[in-house]
Picture (cartoon, helix red, strand yellow):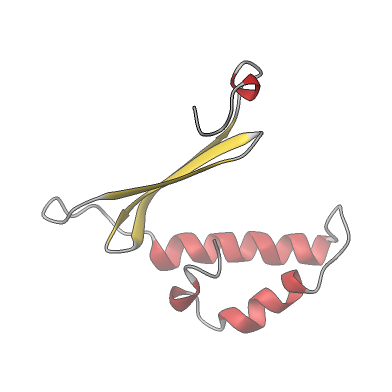
Length: 97
């Protein structure tokens, strides 16, 4: 997701370098801090208020354990949503949720 919104994050390529070179889990503290900083920058750089005159687009994603969505206007998010799936939801394919 960071790469998709990279045009709105100043010096993105320098900041993502710490994350792209990491191969260990759990994440080292400096890598985790970089990740959290990028999340904060993403919110402030791209999150805009809803303009009722413009069309809205919903983008969704699901995995075996979670679901997420963004509400967008002109390719910029106006709202984020994500949550873990309940135990009963995990018994269904993510395309059915």
